[in-house]
Length: 231
Length: 211
Image (cartoon, rainbow over all chains, first blue to last red; front, side, top):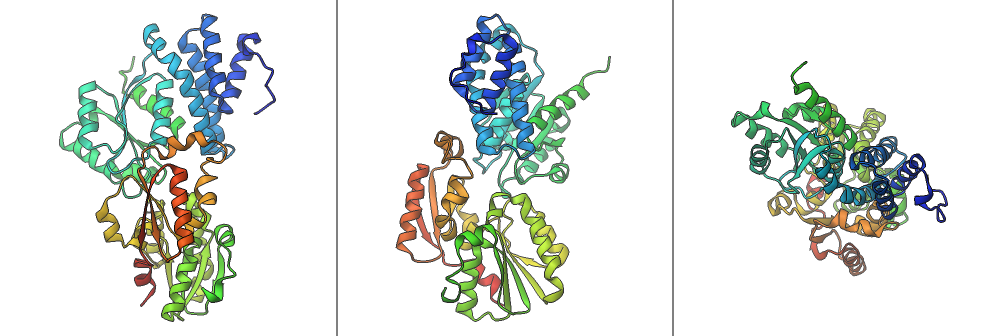
């Protein structure tokens, strides 16, 4: 998607072209351009929620699809994520002020014994972009931290990530701990990470295994909707 | 290494090794272990073994390891009495273990080659969470396996995202090689990590191959 846009002046573009350009810039991992685009749209009285969904989230969805299809690779996805993070940093306080729609609350962390947080951070960012409130417990997370925080914060979802074959079994420990406290059905439990698969997710008793950040968002939305009382 | 010094790391990385030896036990190994397996065959006179290696670069795409091992088992199993799979779990999430069980092949009970070089019990007991490991092969192939695939040649600013939670690089040395130690130390510096060298020799790989 990289064109020679050195002379492009973002503020000269109309709204539709600017959104398109921002999606391109996100794809190319251009953080400064994204930040500039966000500020321009704010100056044009766009709501923070519209900027988030119509430029950043829409752009990251293209990035996610191309990653899934083997067109983009991890470094490029991380550059795009860096760029989105730059835009989110500007928008986040404004989203709170303007009362953007809330989808639910998620406690997320990389499991005990594991320090790999790239996938977890991507999921957290995309979930936040989709309107979920995120409480990020970081890395090396104990079952008591997941459960204690979910209880204290009134979370809807517990999300667990692991990169190592040796640490992924800890997810079952967390779920067993939920069960022993009679809390398993209170939470949607999602799991993800490179060595995991659907079969593992089922085996440990998670509600779903999520192959990537976009699937995590779709799955969370679907499972939250399924818990809503029918009209 | 005399008989195989003409095998290049690049070939082991991209293509693996077609076949070495004429024994009735087939060793299907990661290309990253080829030199070590060959050294053990020579040192211990393991003439009952035949070695074939899959491309070592599969290390970076663990989801491809199990299908590749299965294809190799199916291709060769009629010609051999036993099959040994010289891999750890290597990020396959237990799938390689299940595959070996299905075909009656033996594999190394370890999460990774780092673990079985050091000795899986010792490795597990250390419980190191914040260490990044290199072996002899990975030290030699650091750019091809780590630096370039992670995009650090193009985007050095991603270093913190990848390695910010790590504290040290542990070089598990199979051989005494001052130049390779210096290379591994440079790798640690490039990643911004402390450096530690541990001489492991061939660890559990030796016991796995020797009847």
